[in-house]
Length: 291
Image (tube, rainbow, N blue to C red; front, side, top):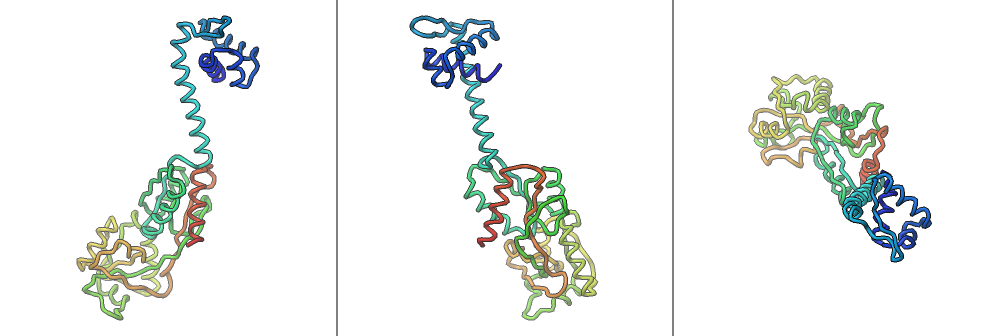
């Protein structure tokens, strides 16, 4: 059933006269007559009684009118939604972020939401390696990740992250020697699958400084890790951005030298066309320039 035939049927039923319906549809009366004849032929029903007073619905026509109106409304709503999605003005977007973008990601999402309030943003905490795989598979729209990324994805640097040593407040004093603390305390770190990039960064720093901690203990999430540090169970090499979720019993000590900085950026899969994603990328990059 052609949607044009349904629209001709509904329009004539509402207008009651061929010339008025034809004018509204921007077609000729003979063309409208052919469309009505076509829908009656397809349905096998007489839908209108024609007379000098115009066209009136038959009983069968009245029964089908409501359903035809619902179909047209659904079709028009679908077209409207499709246009909005094509323009990137409505819909849903899934975004990833990691430990190093605890503050950065929500800030950029807030800017985007203020500009596109009809778009639902799902912000998910996940490691960079997981984000990159989901981006390649088309299961994630964009991700705040550790750079660089592989050549299958596009990326843009947003900020520089710094490696710090997180220690218990009771171990902190002015001029504290971070290297000595690592050498004399258990090193706490996230499990490899949860913090692969951070673990690798820490390993490079330890190797460059010839540091071998007494023991390495592993936690599966950052909150547990910080709680263990606060309890004096050890120290940890973490990104400076953890300051935004830092317990009062934990202090951060800045580190210097090689392998103490890296870049955080936005990554996306440009091979997948998605106007909502494109609007998000433009907003994040432009807001970064403004800041």
